[in-house]
Length: 187
Image (cartoon, rainbow, N blue to C red; front, side, top):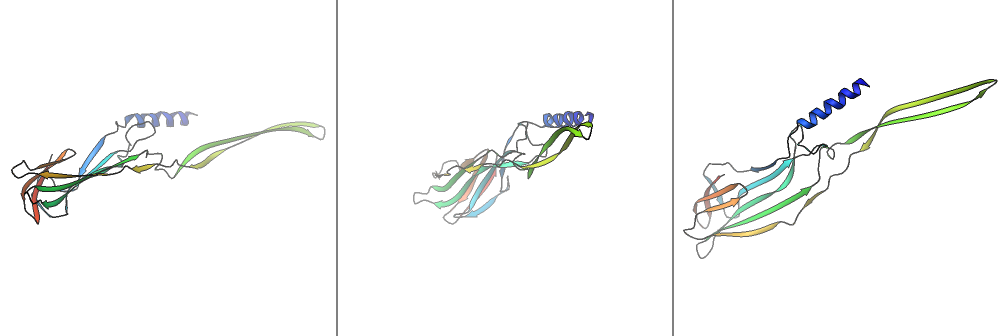
């Protein structure tokens, strides 16, 4: 029984030590460098993630993450009026994934007791039999759903500041022509 209490206290301490759920934006392109891309190329992609939730509603102790979607910006060239054209696609993913849904199986303690009594010849007998063990139940399944993505066209007029925002990142246009763009990414 003492070992059981120690295990519970240790588990509770470990769970309470986990932080709050944080959301992250991870850019795929290098930040702060001059980059070049052609028409139709992805010029900025920001992947959105959040901490995986544990059974106490806190961040996973091991730092695991779950996907929340992305923002993707593509260079589309120069319009006839001289505007610089981009296409921005946002995809949002909703999920109830937790540390429990990522487990293969969940241990469930099992205990069974049987009592019997009767007579054996001229003797009465009484007995109790107890069996304990662990059964393994399948973990609950996570539900993940991609919401309909939205795509918008962004036009930067000639002479307009060349900034395209994607989450906390911004794409700054250095030069653009009908075949390629040179740009940098910052926060």
